[in-house]
Amino acid sequence: ENFIVFIGAMPGKIIQCLKSTGSTNPLVLIDEIDKLGRDYRGDPASALLEVLDPSQNYTFRDHFIDAPVDISKVLFMCTANELDRIPGPLLDRMEVIRLSGYDVPEKLEIAEKYLVPKSMVNSGLMVKQDLSEEKKEDEDADSEGTNKMDPLAPQPTYHLAERVPPSLSIRRSALESLVRWYCREAGVRNLSKKIEKITRLLSLQVVAEEEGAQLTEKSKRKSDTWEVSSDNLHEYVGKPIFTSDRLYEKDPLPHGIVMGLAWTSMGGSALYIETQGIKRGLDAEGKPRGGGTLNVTGQLGDVMKESTQIAYTVARARLAEIAPDNSFFDDTDVHMHVPEGATPKDGPSAGITMVTAMLSLALDRSIKSDLAMTGEISLTGKVLAVGGIKEKTMAARRAGIKTIVLPEDCRRDFDELPDYLKEGLDVCYATDYSIVYDVAFVTDSVK
Image (tube, rainbow, N blue to C red; front, side, top):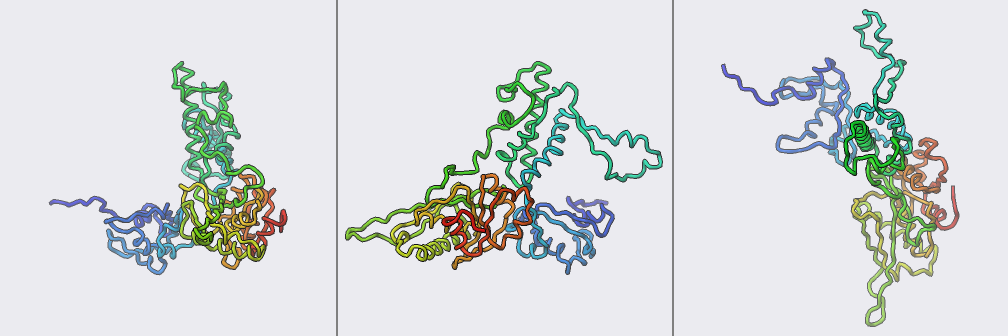
């Protein structure tokens, strides 16, 4: 007899999970669900609708076995980086739990306890010694079959391998520099890559000096120590990717410039709003040409462009209340720019920052360099809540900010932050732009 074997002729992943676990209620993790593809072979998002819908998955039908299977007891967990890339119908069938990225102390702890020892062992610079091995050898034969782990068992220790210089180490100052100037992403993937790059080069240098081999100018050891610190870190990972958290160092800032706070894929960052006035020219009759207009640049998304128009209207209305005789917006065209034009930006959270920048330009008054703000602005001047408070607070601390203006509705989010993130920050909560104006132009701090 002739048999035809089709490639991939096997049950789907869901059925394979049930078979491999031997359980009807396993935990199934679907990683990076926002990276789903779609081509001529089918649409995975449509298939997942039946899998994740509680009203349908009790009769899930796999095309290979062609029989209904009850997967309603399975706990599905999905991970994603961006919710916007998940199809709406699929997102409706999920319960969303937002997790913030690691802050600096957490990254340092992860690096010191896990990433550095792991990379050192993989590079042959360290040897892992499990203190529980001797204890396990003394156990009776009856307990050899048990595969239980003792949570109170001592953690493994590490020591330098033979013929490795005893002074070889990666100092905490080097890790701090890596986190601040090289690896600002929410996770620790790039941090792990940088540490592995350091340990590989250290391993190469140790072997080369032991065997007397000649290395290239880029690979050879330039300092007279085996310790990697912030001073010689650039010899192993190159120049810093990030150079400064502040675009403007002097205090106060130039007129028309205010620091905002933004949430990005790298965590949080300082977001400057720059405004410049262009005096209108006169026509042949000596009358001003054109009208008061707003020009916006900086690769802004649709939501942020709408926010600029709202901020312009609010700024004109507030200026009429503050200084009725000021005709700045009638006589001057305004150009607003958000630096780093190659980076796409979107979202409404820079609303109050834009209004403050335009009022600073119109009133010819500067803003303190240690003041940053974030919040959506409504057409009537209400300050609305925004997200990413933890990441924005981390960015403010990194930039040396002392005063932050947040929406009143974000008070709970800020209160939930660890104390070391809130320490030394003067936080002002605003429900209306008048409070933001008082903080920026009238008083040093308004609670």
